[in-house]
Image 1 (cartoon, rainbow over the protein chains, first blue to last red):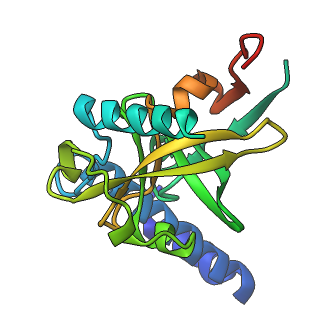
Image 2: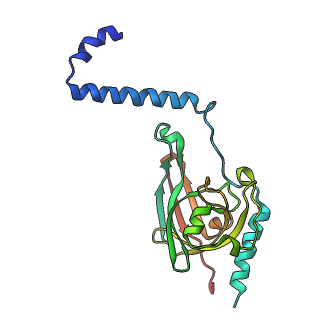
Image 3: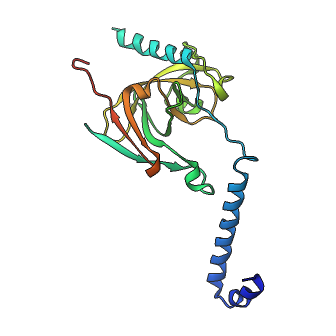
Length: 70
Length: 142
């Protein structure tokens, strides 16, 4: 089915349904764009402090000192 | 033992489930100050991280926190200092949590191995987009 086949039916839709259709198609296109660009074009920051063992030891020590404080 | 179940949060609506992460609400307490935050439960993070503004809102003063904490990854360039807070979530008993309070605001609250995972037992059910948290078993006398 082509757009030309669909067009008469779409043009006959009430205004509210045309607006709904626009929203649906816009969301659909945005979703496809997002999926195709997910790997290559977007920046995905990774904040996890991996292997920050020295920092972790510092925090454990701070907790220990607080616990030992009178 | 009491546990609480949280749903994963989809951080990017256009990506839907692909962007779902285990975020949970937590109340952070410092003295009389309390702040609500949405925290990332991050089993890959070595330690807890607190963004700069949230520390300020809790009344912490950067210059008064004298213990430097060395970070890694994207945060390696951000200066951080140790800040001890109390964390409470859902109906679970609160816990004393040590944070690397960083100068950066581009980071979420991160709950990592030290010491969130030492205080709370966490079970992820990613296939169902939920995770469960319970307080660790307390040895007698603790």
